[in-house]
Amino acid sequence: MKIGIIGAGNIGTALAHRFRAAGHDVAIANSRGPETLRDLAAETGARAVTAEEAARGRDLVVVTIPEKNIPQLPKDLFSGVPDDVVVIDTGNYYPRQRDGRIDGIENGMTESAWVSQQIGRPVIKAFNTIYAQHLQDYGKPKGTPGRIALPVAGDDPKAKAVVMQLIDEIGFDPVDDGTLADSWRQQPGSPVYTHDYDVNETKRALAAATPERKPEWKASANSPGTFEAPV
Image 1 (tube, helix red, strand yellow):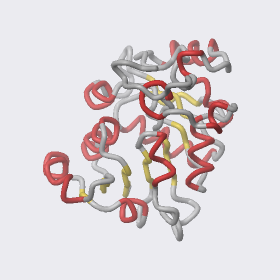
Image 2 (cartoon, one colour):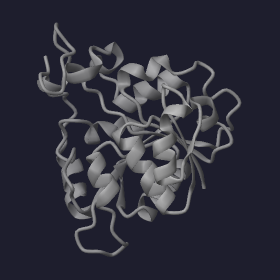
Image 3 (cartoon, one colour):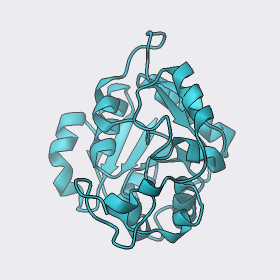
């Protein structure tokens, strides 16, 4: 599969490693230009490209940048990209630590529904509940006891099936988390978030989630601070 990754932070880097190890053709971009990704390209075998190049000629595109930077993506990023190209959003909203207030999310939209609105494309929510280092290092063969499960939410059954197969290929068990409107079950503060649960534990955690955004995951008057000192 031809995969584009927009964002070369912790999750983007981990996915580049996992996807290349599974034999996929990977192109990766960041906001600073391909020349800044030479070391990562040499390490993983991914190609360093621009964001526009990462979104074109691909079967699947991963958007993995801070929520606050989503509106800064090129407005024509997906212009001309076929409708059957799957787009994954891995993002999490950290209002007190990094992103500041985003009204759409604060007013009740799920994080990925907001991202979808901003980029003008349907998205599948995945890879947001696991630490990047665990994503890179903890993949296991199918059938391994205790294999980590990752929830997947989205409205297009075919696109979701592609993402779930990809998750299985890179060493994790996919769990269907319903539609994008259901994806609050895997947002920060939910029982599944940052826990390396197996399939059964993940399903229990998703079922135990409640839709109210906890106060620590809402913006304050002074947001944002930092991850070390959120406000």
